[in-house]
Structure formats: C-alpha cells, structure tokens
Image (tube, rainbow, N blue to C red; front, side, top):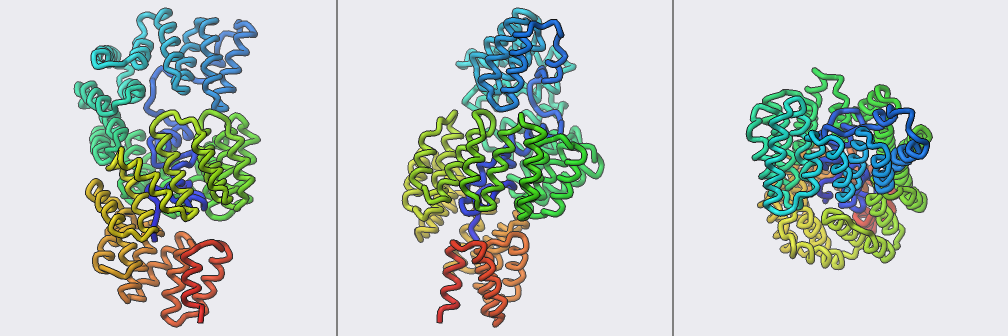
Length: 594
C-alpha cells in the first residue's frame, strides 16, 4: 500500500486521503519545533533557547507602583501573546519598556519581538537594554544576532559570541544551547553550521556543544549527521533529557522508530520524572500504532499536569484516532473553558475532530477561529484541505494562492498541500506540473521526488516513477517509504516479484510498525502465491489501521482461499465507512460481478 512521506502521529483521516497533508498538523511531531520543543515546553522542560528570557510570572512580580496605563500595556501584551497575536504583544511591550525602563519588562519585550520575527523591534529593545545595562552580554549577543549581515559582520559576531561564551561560565550551557537561536536570522544555514562548529570547538567536553552542532546539522536536513553529534552529547552525559529527546526524534526521522521507543523507555525506567521524555514517548507510541500504551502515557501526563492544555489536546487527538469522538470533543471543550488564552491550539484540534466525524463545514469554521499568530498558517492550510474534501478544488487552490507566506518553507508546504488536493481530486497531471516546476529548482528535494513518484504511479508512468524513487534511494538509502512505494508498485503490477519482496522487506525492517508497509508485504506474498503469510501480514496491517485499501487486499486473500462470506462481510463493512475508496470498489466489482 502506498503511504505518505513522513506522516505524523496527528494525521487525521483526511490526511490519509491527502497523504502529504499530514505534515501540516499544529504539532508537527517530526520537526524540531514540534516533537522536541512543543512537547518539552508542554511538560515544563528547559529547552535550547536564550537563557535570559523572562516569563509571565516574573512580569507579574513587577512593582505595584506602576502607573495604570503601563499595567494595561503589560496585560495587553500578555493576553495578545497568549492568543498568538505576537505583533500586538511586541508593540505593547516595546511601549512598556520605554515607559518603565525595567529590565524584566525589557527582557520580556525581547522575547516577544523574537517570537514575532520582528528584527527591527528586537534590535530596538536590545539597544535600550544595552543603554541601561552596558555590561550585559545577553543584550549584546541579542543585538549582534539581529544585525549580522555580510561576511565581515558575521566574523565580528562570531568574535563577540566567542567572548561571551568564554567569559560567562555560569551560563555556558544555556548559551551553547542558544547558539542556533542566535543565528536564526542568517539565511545561509551552511555558514551557520560552520560558525557553530568553530564556536563550540573549545568546549569539546560540554554536551551542550554537540546539541548545538546537531541542531545546526538538522537545520540543513542532515539528520544522520545530527544523530552522530547527539550520540557524542549522550556519551558525555547519558540520559540527559534534551539530548535524549533529540536522539529519539532523529531515530524516528531515520526510520528507527523501535530504537527511539527503546531509548525513551529505558530513560524513563531510570528517570520517571522526565516529563518531556514521557511526552515524546507517548507521541511516538501513538505513531507506532501502540495506541493503548500511548493513551496510558497521556493519561499519566494529564494527572501529573492537570492544567496543561497541550496534554489535553494530545489526549483528545488519540481519542479521535480511536473513534471516541464525543470524549475527544469533551476534552477540548474542557480545555477551552480552562484555558481560553490557548484558543488557537484548541480550535485547531476541534477542527481535526470535526474532520474525523466528516463534519466538514464545522471543521472549516473551527479552523477559521484560529487567529493570526501561532498555528494560523497551519489552520489556513487545513481550510484549503477541507474545501478540497468538499469538492471545492478551485476555491481551495484560490485560498492557498492568497496566503501570505513568510519564507520558502511555508511556500513549499503550501505547494505540497495544493499537490495533495489535486491528487485527491484525481487531477494527477495538474499536480505533477506543479511539482515539475519546483523540482527544476530543487532536483534533490526528497519529499518533492516522492510526491512526483506517487503521481507518476497514479498516471502509470512507471519508468519516470522508478527514476524518481531510485534517486531518493541514492540520496537516502534507508528511506522506508521509497522502498515501499517501488516494491508495492512492482507487486501490484505482478512484475519483478523477487525484487519487490526485497524492497518491501527492507522497508519493513526499517519501519516494522507501519500498517501500510505490512499491507504491501502481505500483498507481495499474495502475488507470490504464499496465501498463509499474505493473510498473516494483512491481518496485522488491518488490526493496526482498518483502512479501506487494506480491507480490499485482505478480502481478496480470503476470497481466493474460499472464505467468501468473510470477505464480503469485511468489504461491505469497510465500504460503509469509506464509500468513495476506489481500490475497494474496484476489487469488489472485479470479484463480485458475475
């Protein structure tokens, strides 16, 4: 069975129909800011960031003698920040900083300005900070990070940051962990990696040096190299929570989900109080299809962190995946009642539950409630997805074309969503035209190559499909879904079955818990005439994910064995839940029509 590239634990049923769209969930569990940072923050774990960041509690401790108009600005800033309206929050805190000249307020203003990606505002607050505290290395490092430009300027910044690292041993770990954030404004990530390697060279005995190097490599898409750097951090400091979570993330991205789970489980056995590690473990269990264990972990986190909205959202997502939709909605309604300031994340999750219930208009309305700020762009992508599901393909594309994108990554994600919408509408040639233009600019983009291969499979352009998938395997030999796509294509056409089996077995070794790969393995065994093994693997696949295409394959194996009533019962049950599935309908028509 064909499967999406890098699907996430939070993929709704819609994402199964639009495979690439699984990437646009509000908590993207396979991205650094998703799996590591969102989960760690939700569990109260310190994450790589600027060490000087003030928090809301510190602001609440500000002098009571502040004028009412200043208190109003602080309140406005906090409410706007909580709602994801970072531009409003930044302006409120900039004005409050100017009025109070209080370093706590200034640090909070810097945090808001960075979150809104407003470099001019960040520079302004950093300059005020330096005027009030000329000896502050933090203020100087912040100012340097937003003013860097040409090579000469970068060289000066490198020198200044090296001085700060050398002169502040108490904050060395935090400052090392903040290096990637300090260079966030530099577009050339290869240059950033080189600078970080130079800056961390004197601190070869500091685990945080290798975390910084790993993040710099991962920002270039070099997950294998990032994984090697994180191994060095763990050699120096075994079971250190930030490194363990990154290691699990990298293993999952490299296809070793069992290895990631084993690492997290062994760490939690010795350190059960690592809540960030437990949150990552719960999400990866969910990804692996071990839903009961994942639910147990999320409920444990919910007891330990009863007021944490992200834990409630994650639990609601799991409940929705197991079709306990009323309980999922109840969790989200309670979260919205307790934490109205987190409405963006909650409305996004409400949209996902509505999609699972096929309440498409309710889903669209929920996504429309997400306001500008954190999660807004993702919600806009989901609105387009829902419009596509409603058959409004032209309107969905128009919606995507009107979106304001902040960077190349957002532009790329919008493109992939548009491709997914076209593919779901069976407009394969139109989708391929979009990809061809992008592949001309970035011919070795693995995700674009995979999407092109999927479309070419649909268009029966098998030579072109194989060329694209072979290129992926040259770039990333252990890409499980590329192995699965090519192997399934060969098996489905009943050609080169020995090679097909080898490819699918390799995919299964890399990702043994994938229902889609198990389905492919069962299908190739069927093509080879091994009905016993075919049924075994297809039953496993269907137990993990009762997908219509898996039902079609399993039913055909039962049918060929003479168990026709079992096959028909399975098909009709699956058809009732998935009336539009082409593979299932075609199978039933072929075998049931006299």
